[in-house]
Amino acid sequence: MSKNTLIRSSVSRRQFIKGASGGIVSLGLLGSSSLFANPDNVIRIGYVMPRSGPLSSFSQGDDFLLKQVHKQLANGLNINGVQYALEFFLGDTQSSTIRASQVASDLINGKNIDLMLTSSTPETVNPVADACEAAGVPCLSTTAPWESFYYGRGAKPGQPSPFKWTYHFCFGVADFAKLYIDQWSKVKTNNRVGMLLPNDADGNSIRHLLIPDLEKAGYTVIDAGPYEDGASDFSQQINLFKKENCEIFNTFPFPPDFPVFWRQAAQKGYAQRVKISQLAKAGLFPAELNSLGRLGYGLAAGAYWHKDFPFASGSTGLSSQQIASGFEKSTGKQWDQQVGATASLFDAAIEALIQSNAPKDKVALVMAITKLRTETAVGIIDFTKGPVPNCATTGLVGVQWVKAQQGPWEFALNIVSNADHPLVKVTNTMTPYRIGG
Image 1: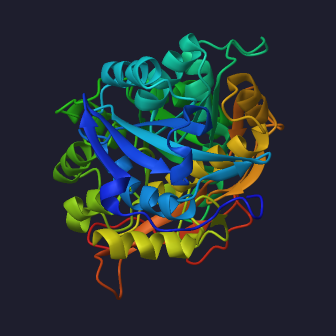
Image 2: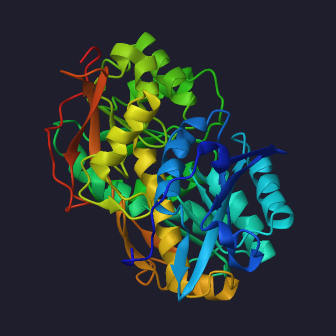
Image 3: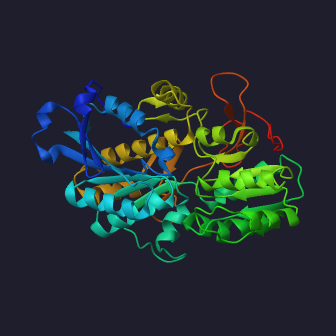
């Protein structure tokens, strides 16, 4: 972030939280009190997340991070010689795509926002982005595979981008392929993969793009076919994976669905055969692992942020280690990877506002995003490199949940592969999955 841009001071929480109306919480103005009466110098930022419902784990770091941003931006931003105050408006999707679209429209039409921020699964990101695209409001998002954001909203390969106002940075399916091929090579298996994919934007993207890459790398993939989110009986899929002797299991489920599947897999004897159980979308949060108990030891995943990342967050003024420890101290909960990813969204947004030189000009702000290259908590994001218009990619590291040997938490998250993110160090070896660790 540009030097001498942020000025620190303190504002009480009573000033910071202004109240809720219609599911939208307004955070108090951040900036010199002399600016409060001049709306031309107030940047209004919408922030839409699943703050309740099945996806609410993705937002449990929001309050902590917004307090840190508040400390950094308490006196606002000096952009091109003009001092701006900032005001944040938080909207809750309730983990519903319909609600996400409604909340985004309410912020656009009722709060006259200058910039929209959103994150965490296509069920959140895509409807918010669509609302912004229709209204001509700049939108920046993260934490959904970029293919789900880009192709899942109607873009076509090889054709010009249909999007002018909406931009996204995140890992993609190619990152999963690179990561999995490396991570799975660390455990001896028969290279037969049981794939459980839902009938949603993530599942459909993975099915069409990841499976061919894995097959090219020598894996035999057994696709159990699309299923609907919220399914309660996975007997058919489990029996198929047992029949096909799939020693690797891979899934991208709606988070509440995985514990249902995995407990049934253990009851029916399939989990005992698995040597690698690789999760995405589910298995990101310590609370999920705690609920599984001994069934959780050894589960593998990809991490888009980790406390050991060697990157800092300009919007909060914290290193990755400080983000993790600060979150734990503030909430009494174990850190999770979304805390750093959310920090990176604020990092990119603030830098885009600065580089626009005219943050109240929506066209100038969009142009700044198209040229944005900056360090964030998840690493460098660069919108000038693609892989497609409107998108920038970030890396993944391979991780494995293991029983913690010390400290207050039941699980530890070890980095076991860095093929897709070489700037991050590998800290542990990958071990075969075994119930009970």
